[in-house]
Image: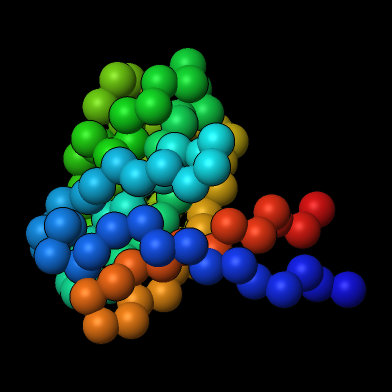
Length: 109
Ligand code: FES
């Protein structure tokens, strides 16, 4: 049975400019919250290569972001590495008015 979702407010929409990201915390998780063409995407901020928490400073290209450290690149939609290997977690995002919420329910395994 799937767990009920639990959305937590993490930012205001105006905190995140188009094509940019914000680093937000959700419990122990650090999240890179990207805004691309008006839509928000939340991925784990910690690169699966050497675990630098830098994906919020990565280089955006389409719907992928490249880690600024050594260039491993992740899909914002799936979190899967399209260059390098592994993946980062993705989170469901909800916007209500000016408020941005992220679902903190642990992923189903
Ligand atoms: S730490 Fe991200 S590519 Fe090396």
